[in-house]
Image (tube, one colour):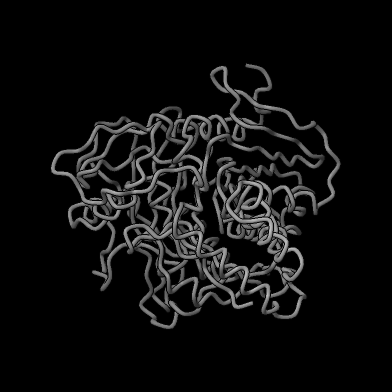
Length: 471
């Protein structure tokens, strides 16, 4: 079957959280050797990156930074980052890196739509505070990766056509080494990696690369403590099978559709090209995606995409389906880019949520990251996987099928977890420190739809405490 990207198309020009549904065999990411020549002088760059104030921003009591980190000097390859220090206790709270998936989608969407301190109002030029921002629990670093995503760029044209899992893991690691030279106060800080969707690949691959270089150097270069991934691409076969089973059990596709898929489709990485019957059924099912939001099957659609002269009343607890348009307008304002220290080379294209060309030309994508998750568990690192339970693109069924494939003994049986007297979701803990949790009422971008529950989740993850089992 021809691989096809599945994207949530909004207003015909915006996409969010796409990922390439394809496989290139079981070969795992190999950690590239990184030596001292990959670390460049950083003196004085931290203060140059300080953001005094973003346009339309409310007053805050924390510092924020934005700028570029060169990851390949000869190619002129540079990744853009945005960093917000913790709202309190910044000197003791951990450092958390957020990666958005795609491949080819921007982590600035994570910052301004999901887990950062601000959201964009409907005028496209004002911000309001996110009271459930993850920088109440950590110092949070957002990275636009790989090159070609958002404001990240290269002076070498061929770089844009040579993205893949392997180079992304290496560039992200080189970014961290250089960023920590720029911000040396975080060098010995507890470090965690979070992400969603195709970052189910990026997060464990970067973690694997960190562990490889720590072991090679026989010292702790980066003090990785754990990873957390949401609605994550983990294992191609179970991801695909789980998606169609979810669509069927939620009355989106017919009994005949799922029967045809079960009979004719084989999503195994070793399988021959899919049959004509499989392709025909999947093409028919994909047509349904034109009529609802596959990333949140119960979410309203955006029917009034235009910006407003005066900002509409907004609530963090009630996600506005037109928010993507507000974000697009805001990040393409020259004054915003100047404040962010972004687009310094004057790119010939706008900032976009996702770069279609990246996932269309993606070079390598192993069919599974399960061996990397096992490696992290074996080495004693915390691994959490969460799932918004009304996402149909990488649904809870896919994640459960993938975890079941690991055949792990259960340590703490399936039970509800609570927040403010309500069920926040359900959770199960496995031997080896793997926690799986659902987030009730959340779509693919969990913190966008359920910010309070997402914050409870990240707080317990960072604290290393179980989700509360009483109300």
